[in-house]
Every structure is written in C-alpha cells, then in structure tokens.
Length: 416
Image (tube, rainbow, N blue to C red; front, side, top):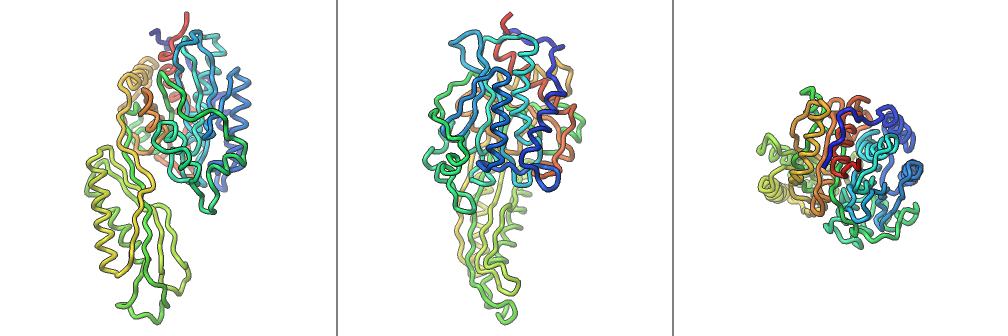
C-alpha cells in the first residue's frame, strides 16, 4: 500500500482551535472540563461533533449504546473501513485533552484529506465511544466493551450512577440512543490517539509513544462493616472501626503494588464513610481498589494477595467485609501491523519515538479483541491527567495527529 508523503501534515491550527472550542462545553471550575457520560453537557458536545462531521461531508450513525460513527466513503464499496477515534466524555474534574484529542484528531484527518482532495480505497470512520471514563457509570470503556462482546447490552443499560439513575434511561433522556445494533460493524483496523497520561515521554524529550501493549486492570469495590459508636465513650479495645480497616487496606494495596515493581501500580480511589460524623466511629466504609500490570500473572497475584490481606485485616478488627470485582480486562498486545504503521509514520515524519506500555485503559484495549488495533501517544505536561490542570502543547498535539494521519491513511490506501 502506498504511504502518504512526508510533506503531508494536518492543519495544527484548526485542530487546536477545535480542541479549545469543544472545551467551552462543560467547563470545570479550574480550567478543565466536566462533561460526564450522558449528562446534558455530554449531549451538547456530541451535537457539536456531529455538526462538524456533517460539515466535513461525513454521514453520522449512532448505535444502541450511543456510540457515534462518522463515515467518509472510500472508492471501493466492498472495502472494510479504517476506524479512528476515542471518547468525548470526561472525568468530573477532567482535562481538555483526555479522549477528546483522539476524536478530534480523527476528524482532522478527514478535514485534511478533504483539503488536499485525497481519496482512499477504504472508508474512514471517526468514532466517539460512549462512557470510556466510567466515572458516572462503572465500568469504564462500557460501550466499546459491549461492541467487543465483553459486556451484555442489557447489563450495560442497567448500570446505575450514584443517584440510582440507569444508563439506559439516561441514554434515552439525552436523545443519543441510536437504532443500530451494537457490534455489527467490521473493521479493517482501529487507531486511537491519546495523551500519555504519564511522565515518560516528556521526561525523555520524546515526541511520540508507539503503544505496543496495554496494562491489565482489576477494579474491586470493597465494603467493610463495623459498628457505629461514640468516639469518646467507646473503649479502644471494643471498637469495630470500619474506617481503620479502610486505612489498613489502603496501606496493603500500596505495599502489594510496590512488591511488583517496576510496572505494577495500585491505589484506593473512591471512598465513602458512613455515617461520616465527627464523633461517630465509622460503622461502614465503601471504597474502590484499582490495580494494574502488563502481566496477567502479576495482576492475578496482586488480586489474590489483596483479598487475603483484607480477610486478615478484618478478622483482626472484628469487622465484616465484602469484595466485588466491578471491572476487569487482561493485559493487551496490540496488532504488530498497526503498531508498525505508527512507528513507520513517526520515522517518516522525523519525530522521535519510543515503544511504550499504556498504563491507562482505553477503548482500543477492547476493540483489539475484534479488530487489528494500535495506539499512538503524545506527551502531557508533568504526566498529569484526570485533573483540570491537564495540559499539552499545540506542537505535541500536531505531532501525534500527524502520525495518526499517516498511519490511518496508509492503512486506508490512497487512490492515485
């Protein structure tokens, strides 16, 4: 297949302007974004993306999970499409680039092809996956998981947020429940551009991360049950303190992750304490554990040690416990051909690059199960993400999108 010439670059000003325009929807309190899944702000962002796609001549379809597919036709009606994209939803205190760069980077590919009058044999489909973040409706990467056959659609519809609202009901409420059955689309390949969400590329002064693998992940939700009692009048030996149990489990998770360095990570994320009163010993705590590793054996060993440790801690404190796995995917090895297309593009364009393992979960990790898939990453300042202070430079965004453009267009095959 013919590769695009090294002189072909995306319009970096237009890409940046689009990123800044999308960031006006669901502004956060500290310069970032709050555009959580299936909120009104999510709906508004979707409408803007749809308008831009239609202005670029794309036909926009929506499946029953709300995922958006914006298609640029190829010259061969029988050729499988090349898909590119990410997600527009954000954390409650999210940044302007996590996910959004991958969606609007895909749109910029199409806009650049239109500018240059270039046709491809294979169609190109720019994709916005629903609920990648998982912050409102667990688990993360929900729609891509249903697409890949990992999750049942009815089960996904019944996911509930902290206020008890159902995913399926909220999808209908904002008007983005499409008619298209989920998972019926076939792909030649899927590419995703993303900020690194870590410090390696910036620290090493490297332009492009060629993602070869993705870490496996397990999310556990833990409920510890003690006994509420007065903080002043309950003797220390008689306390059944669920808060103390949560503190000890927090240390346990850290210690287990440290035992599997250099690649394993683990932390406590969401925490709730009941009744959360200053003079009542906590009778119940609910919290989440996030553990990750690029090796399945390590991930399973961490899980087992944490579960055993929780049992030991709770027996010592005379408190009850329940551990529920609420999210999981095994480590991912991305398609060698797609990875090579990204590496070749970086070399052709003169960008410095290195292989990298994605520490975060992405829609590409699920789509890798049903189609050849790979990711390209660009640096972010101080490795910071899932934070309103998340930042990248215009030059980093352009480099990542240039590489994405070349990998996608080479795979889609330019028609001379």
